[in-house]
Length: 439
Image (cartoon, rainbow, N blue to C red; front, side, top):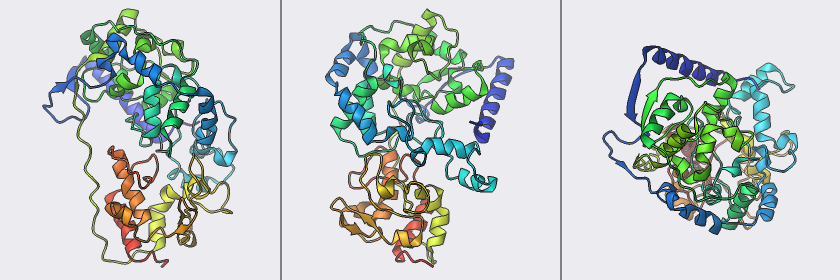
């Protein structure tokens, strides 16, 4: 796939800046992670505090699920629409979300260039996603199960992240068991290394070109990782915040992973950077044990602007909001290809019949759990806190989800993407308050 132009510019700029700093020999220790200036480091209340005595192994064993059932659930939740390595056959082309986005970005679909160019803004997300074939070899099943139910943002350099599916606790546990099946024996071996030396090593090896480590003191020593640009661009997008390593990653494999990732997972994106065993242990100790500042407080609820004192039409809402991403999942039968999971069901969701591609489609409303159609625009008392109307509430709820306050009553939209801006939400809410007119 052709390298995304904006990302290539970012990679080039990063490399040039690093090269310039290296020539000057600058090294700047600093605090990082979005914590307020002057925030005192505190020990993270995570698995790091428990790994030395091996308590994490007991946690993982107690969280064991049914891997055979988990394999069937991969098909139910259609993980293969976005991920390779699921163990399922590739879906039909109109169900290949990531595959289609990649082809649009690379201009490899048999359509006129002007059409592909017009599609690129709406398909710029979900182009680079992790494979699932070997991810379970290093991940903790207990964390995976929690993440599948209530996804958190792992990769700071991507706008998109795992959508919040409608998944039961048992399903999440069994899926995690399937993804981690075949992983090596859990070993309660403490990580023995020098965290202070590890901080210098992680900085010197250029790890922060790709990774963030929110809340940790870190030494930024300018050094460009010797990685091909295409691989570096993918690494920047997929690199997780190292703060989460303490809960996500098996501590007994971390030093080996840091030294030679492909020896742990054959399809690892992360490169080997020429560390010795001792350096890898020191780097692992830094990642697992360096004190972390408390995370910043959750963002407050979105400020909903008052409705506009002017008329808003469907076409204005469609052009400024719906067509940006909503109509991907909320199209109509006969519009070409799959109408989308928000219309005919998918990713474990029942069909809701929500159609935003045309004005007539919006008037059809949505299917409730009882199979009865209801308006997207009528006030629902259970949703008053988030705007009342189902459409508005779903858009507000996405901001709640991204701030760590998932709403049980409604799924946030757009799924897996940042919430609408206050101005975009104001536009939709104005349109709904006017009775959702066509013209």
